[in-house]
Length: 422
Figure (spheres, rainbow, N blue to C red):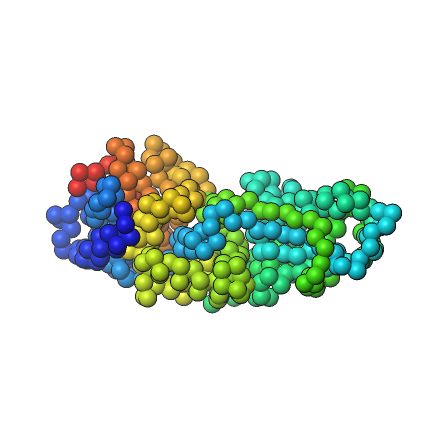
């Protein structure tokens, strides 16, 4: 399906589903309209993809921008994959300067640990426990130094996080949102937690990363009595080690399966650094918005304020999310990675949802902050019909139980195939 065909089809979806017509609507329309009658700050759109045709199944104010909460990570994932490529890998490097000398196993000179914004840089234990074993382990940076014949370093370890700016939080966050995302930075290990458990944040994540490198070096027999300090890698330096991350498609999967805010915000800064020349949240958000708007996925009414969806300044319409997911469905070069990143029923953020026979046929991204409950994704019915949907429920008096039960009812009906012949 071509992009312009999708856009035209979604233009037809702008017709409102009026509650008064619910009696003659199908079961999915009735489910949505009953909820929306009492909760008008709702936006929803459900499409069925029939080869090159698109059939609208149900809608309610689909073009009205709403707070997306963590379904914003769909935009972050898509923007990252489009801007950097699904095979993109972060490269965390260790250097020494050109004046350093190596004699008798002793390196005389500083060692620079240059961060690349890798959101999965970690100790082996943290990677196994919290990252599904997909982390870029610090020991991969230590072992090459020993292979170079280094047994002792007489100089400091310099932690370089200058790939990003020094802002530790996302844009336009409420102060207490620091509870939901560790400090951001260009050189972070263990997602900025102070230990191998997700208990306490490190106030200086770059220095903590330098200490972890020192610990890894000592564990393999490389003495490092020097201090760890902040600094910048010289332009002319000698490469000692290079640890590459898992491909971006794997990182996006880690982000979406558990709705990881830290990964989302780090990817946003990374898009800014590598695609826009500035490692800031603002540059990344602008680049992601540009990448999506150029392809007709979002409109001028949508707003991308951060990568995680924590900011209440974010706005996406149900139509925009459905456009994004529809293009992902039809453009496997980048879209396959995005669709595959969404948890199935019964796993990740859907651990307690869609656990029955419909579970394997559902892939969806959840979202929740105060006053917003959202769900968007893909459903395959029993007879193999493919549906794309987005349901954004906002409101100061939002009842989370009612919102989720309505979302689940819609998805269950799709999976059961009640709209297959609509």
